[in-house]
Image 1: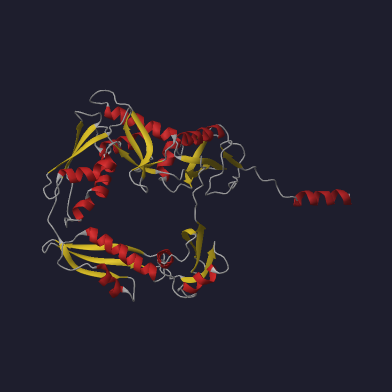
Image 2: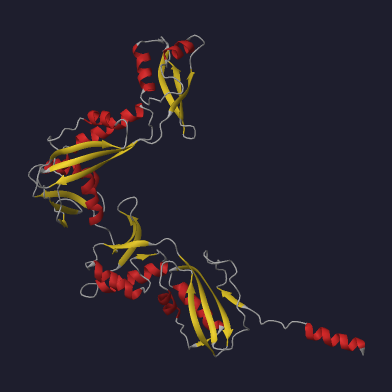
Length: 454
């Protein structure tokens, strides 16, 4: 009897087993990067086939609204829920092509299932652009928003997303005319300008010739010479072509003080004598500007010396070829002072009433480097000390970046070593210690092989 009573007490003290927890992820999919590899488990048994959904959540997405994601799942509160229904909703979300991985978890309570989707976005998304589709950009954007509810101006370049976008744009472009097939690719007009481009399928138009209209200050042959080498033979896309205009034509006008040149219109047509298209650029040359106030900033205490070195004078024609030459002189001068990583930029303020351009040449010197040691190779025990004695840079002093070449030229001019050939130098720059070691390399003279006499 005593043993039976002890067993009854132990049975009463044992805790009740909790219900199994459920967390489901598509088989083979990685855990979302913003979530733990194993999401928190729910506290419910396997759901009954007709238990209703009490609540829905979507966590983890940083790019898309929760409401839009849940709408694409096809689920809503009050509808029946089950593991099969939740699996199908997860698969629908994955099929959109906007997400890298999706998992879900659910809790079963008195009111029904509390379902939470765990989202990991595809991180690489790019803005969209359109060319030669014959439809306005706003109409194209509206078509993508209708076909892809998560479209926010950018798209991940996945097959499902791009296929849906091409289909929507093709239908829009073909609505009032012949059928238009649409292609897409990730491309760029500048190195930092990756985007998804949509365009008609087929061979792209190639620039065959460029003409200018409205120019008077600069003759057309000068403009054509400046642009033909970089534009002819390229695929025509207006944003890309305008970038070419900025790089090739603006400097031609800026060298003449024309700082307000514009290209308000570009017309394309089939070239008559060559295969490709003919591009005609409308030019508004604007007025001529002179230099106003000119200053150098950022390189204290050398600003005044650098300003004099720039040779830019107030009231002279604002020739930006001279500005670029001034930047080069400033760069060389600062490198001679040991500032090997120096950069500069130009800030200009235009005064329309006076037709003047105020300039600030803003210099960023970076760290100053000191001379470390000199190494000489290719000379004997007599030649090496003779060269070392002539070397004037002192260890621990600012390193003059132009001195090694100057020193080599002096050795050549003095014909110090008649039996030697070329002289070269290398620099070993130590960013951690901000020192520079120089090596002079004396190469033997290359003698022509003797010819046999017959």
